Amino acid sequence: MIPRELLGVGKVPGHSGHGKELRCYRHDRDYSIWIDGIELMSSRVHGSEQALAELALDKLGPKAAPRILVGGLGMGFTLARALALVDEQARVDVAELVPEVVTWNRELFGHCAGNPLQDPRTHVVVDDVGKVIAGATGLYDAILLDVDNGPEGLSRPANNSLYNRPGLVAARAALGRGGVLAIWSSGEDETFERRLRDAGFAVKAHRVRARITKGPRRIIWVATRA
Ligand SMILES: C[S@@+](CC[C@H](N)C(=O)[O-])C[C@H]1O[C@@H](n2cnc3c(N)ncnc32)[C@H](O)[C@@H]1O
Image (cartoon, rainbow, N blue to C red; front, side, top):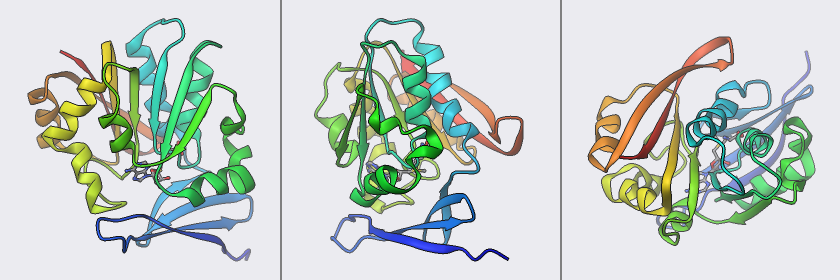
């Protein structure tokens, strides 16, 4: 049996500075990132991460030189799919909280998603996507959020502020006219869906499979400024 090999550990900045840890493993040719014993991401399963970009950009429709925000980077599958669907003049900002994740993409598993960090349209920033959202007004055509396992702060408690009403109102303000907010989740959450509507979004919940045609069901909310 091929053993699983620990390749790196990265601290997730938390509220108090004592954050959790992300662990990067290789098993044969597959890579995975874990937090608290939960697999956050794997190079084997990325259909729904790609669907996040597809559904958001489909909703946005054809647009010249769009400005997109992806948070977080993970293994780069959402980023790579977004890059494939926008034009050469597009700009895709990526906010990733954990610096080691950016290093792992550059040095370990970037090839799994086709090295999207090397694309000149990609602008990566090591920061909280919530901060990037708060600093943007009417800037983005689409914001693609996949930083936890759903609308609650798994990576760190402070991420809850992305999903509460002020966080959603900030995301709405960061979008331009016709802008789209898309959020990945491992499961249903009707309360969150209602909160999206209360924050001024028109919402559709898409049910997709983790591996495109098979695997567990995932939810992707596609929300537009109502
Ligand atoms: C599930 S992975 C993203 C997977 C990604 N969609 C893909 O296609 O590979 C979640 C990522 O979000 C990052 N993250 C967690 N909280 C964040 C935050 N507040 N701002 C930016 N990145 C964050 C994590 O470090 C991790 O790399």
